[in-house]
Amino acid sequence: MSLEERINKDYIQAMKERNTQKSSAVNYLRAMIKQVKVDKRLEQLDDAEVVSVIRKQIKQRQDSIEQFEKGGRTDLVAKERAELDVMTAYLPAAMSAEDIGRLIDAALAELGAVTIKDMGAVIKLAREKAGPSADGRLLSDLVKEKLSGR
Image (cartoon, rainbow, N blue to C red):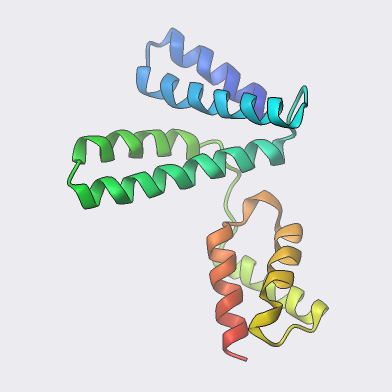
């Protein structure tokens, strides 16, 4: 079963259970997936594209939580965190920092990268090797750290 199908089934299940918080978050994901399908003129998205949509929504939730905390809106922080938890459940298991570090070391060796100017190429190659299971922010931070230390 594809990730998109799983999201649709979970939405139906949440509706049957009258779990409004989960159904709302999953329905929003479904809408964003549909929007990407319309924009790209596709019938179906593969799992990597769906993960990309989910990651984008998670990042938006994280940014919202940060802003709501600054504004003292604890009610909205709780709502956003609940949606974040629902969306995070659909992501593949995240790679550990050590595994990402090994991928970066391999990419550095393969490309012969030595300066911070090579950062984009290293990140691109490491992302290709890692697939959707690597956290982009962590990957970027580790590449920057390794290249600035050379």
